[in-house]
Length: 365
Image 1 (tube, rainbow, N blue to C red):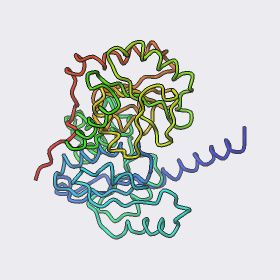
Image 2 (cartoon, rainbow, N blue to C red):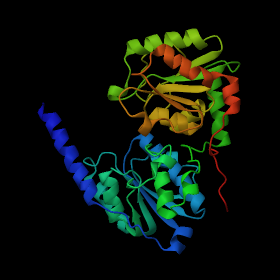
Image 3 (cartoon, rainbow, N blue to C red):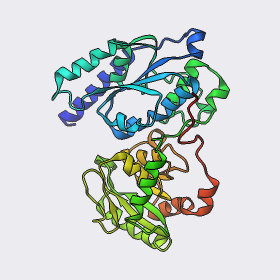
Image 4 (tube, helix red, strand yellow):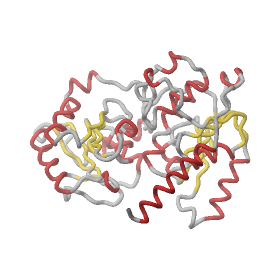
């Protein structure tokens, strides 16, 4: 075993121990606080696109519970300002710098700024996040919730393992402990794209593909071991053209690195604006790509999304959106993938399906 592997094991063990030491949650809240939360801080100091998008269901749930509540966010990087642009319930976004060693003074100041305000409730969004737990402990609050999943009635909660869904179930359990609430549909990931953004997205898409056909968006990139080899994508693209080329456009969505694992054989769309990317994908009949931030962005756009999983856990990271599915490629071949996504590319499937929660739910005044 290499030194790096040993060091990683020691680091993970130490981290698990520290996580257990920070807590537990305050389990008894005053009834008047439960019924009328006015200020909540969500702690999710992680800068990845997918992880920040997965905060959106919990924000929607808190707003459903307490429509006049102000929700502040403690995060890393500036993506949340873009993601929550159309969330009026979100107030302050407290941003840690993405590279703390490059800005150590600012990094420390942001941590200390957690003491400036007092909240009714502070929530650590992800159970095993040490920085989330530490920030939950540091912030001024009447009540703290660390999102431990012990005791969560998993038989009642089909999405109990999902990173975006279990915080919602846990929040309901923490505030109410009501079985009907636990089984209420969980909000989907949502960017709350505006009508103007969606219109612009359709206009952009029509510059690349024929508006007379449906559009299948593919995303061939991913990070690390989640990325499928070029040969695999070459075979996948050939089968997609064979199966759907006569009835569907195929549009490749490019990553920020501007690379294509099918060597730009299909029309390719590139942008650094994640809301515009989402507004384009929103008009697709299907988005197909590996587990990645872009997969979660597609789900948050409202487009049917098929996520490809080979090394990560689908139960934890599957696309959380309307008419979406996770495909474990270690258990099926390319023909199996084609069979799985075919129903999502039919008019009948699209017409019969609808989101469990509207992507832009009205907010009470």
